[in-house]
Amino acid sequence: MSAVSNSNPAVPSGTTVPPALLPSYLQADNLGPWGIYLQQVDRVVPYLGNLARWAETLKRPKRALIVDVPIQLDNGTVAHFEGYRVQHNTSRGPGKGGVRFHQDVTLSEVMALSAWMSIKNAAVNVPFGGAKGGIRVDPKTLSLGELERMTRRYTSEIGIIIGPTKDIPAPDVNTNEQIMAWMMDTYSMNEGATATGVVTGKPVDLGGSLGRRDATGRGVYTVGLEAARHIGLDIATSRVAVQGFGNVGGVAGRLFAQAGARVVAVQDHGGTIYREAGLDVPALLAHVAAVGTVAGFAQAEVLADDKFWEVDCDILIPAALEQQITEHNAGRIKARMVIEGANGPTTPAADDILAERNVLVLPDVIANAGGVTVSYFEWVQDFSSFFWSEDEINARLVRIMKDAFAGVWEVAQDNKVSLRTATFIVGCKRILHARELRGLYP
Image (cartoon, rainbow, N blue to C red; front, top):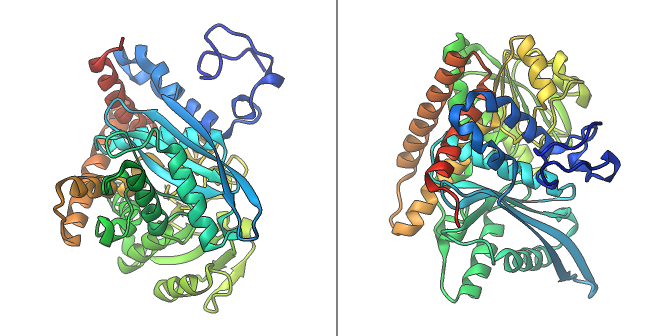
C-alpha cells in the first residue's frame, strides 16, 4: 500500500503513515463504508467544474462525537456501550440522519452514513445537511427498561450537538417511534421546554407525521416506477426480489405487488424464501409481524441464502444493510434493475460489474430518500404546529421524488455516467455551491 493521500481526513496533508498504523477503516485492503464513500467522491470530482477546489470538504466530516453510554442493567450491574453522532456537512442546513442500534456499528459506518445523508438531502433538495448516529449494541439483549435507559443516556450525551436547528435524529436500523419519543422527551427535559422538532419519525400523537412509516419504501417504489418507464419495463409483469422485509423492503414489496408485480423471493436475517408464482405479500407481512422473520412462512419454499442473488427477477431491492452486493455476487445477479432501499448496499467494484452487464442501479442516495423527505415534512409541521393529511404528504413526496429522479436521469444522460455518479454530481454541486457562497469563517 502506498503512502496515505490527503483524502484521508485523519491524516494531515503531505503526511506519510505506514499502512499498519492506520485505523482499519482507512486501509486499502479493508475499505469499509467510509472508504467506499471516498471512492464514490473521487469518481465525481472530474464533473464538478470550478467547485472541485472545494472537494476536500466532502472528504472530511465537520464533527464526530464518540460517547460512553453507561447504564445500570436490571440485575444491578453497570454496562457501558459506545455511541456515535457524526455531522458530515451542514452547509445547506442542520444535520439530518438516523440513529441505529446494532452490534456491528463502527465509526467508519456512521461517518459514511452521515456523508451519504449529505448527498441524499442535497439530491432531493431538502434544506438539510448530513448526519448519522448509532450505538454498538444488540438491542435484542436488553429489556425494555434497559433500552429506555440506554436511549436516554445516549441522548443526554449527544445533546450538546443536536437540536431542532442544529441536528435532527430519526429512526434507522433497530430504532423506531418509541425510541424517538424517548429521545424527544429526554432532550426536552434537559432544555426545560418541549421540543418536538429535535427528532423526526415520532409517534403521531407527539408531533409525528402521517405517512412517515411508509415513506422510504414509497420512495423506493416511486423511483422504481420512473426508472422502469425509462427502460421499457412493465411493472405489472415484472418479478421482484427483496432483501430485508421491514419498513423499507416490506412497504416497497407491498406497493410493487399492488401494482401487479410478482414478489418471487424475500430474504431477511432469518433466511430466504421463494415462490415462482409470487408470494402472498399481505400474508407474508402478517407472518413477519407475528414472528419477526420470513422464516417459517408456509406458502413458500426455502432457498439457501447465497442462492438469493441468483433468483430470476427483473427488479432486485437490497433493503437490509450495507455492502451486500460485492464483486463476489454481482456477476450472478439476473435483475434488469437494482433499487437500493438500504444505505450503501453495493460496493464500487460491484457497481462496475453491474454496469458492464447493463444492470441499471438506482442508488441509495436517490432511491431511499423518501424517508428523509417526509422527515423534512414532519420537521416543518412541528415548527408551524399545522399538520397535513396523509394524502397531501404522499402527493408531495411523490412529486419531489419524481422531480429529483428526472434531474438525476438528465445529468446521467448528458454526462454518460451511472445514476449513482449523476446523483453525486447533483448533490455535491449543491453542497459545494453552498460552501462557496458561505465562504470560510473566520
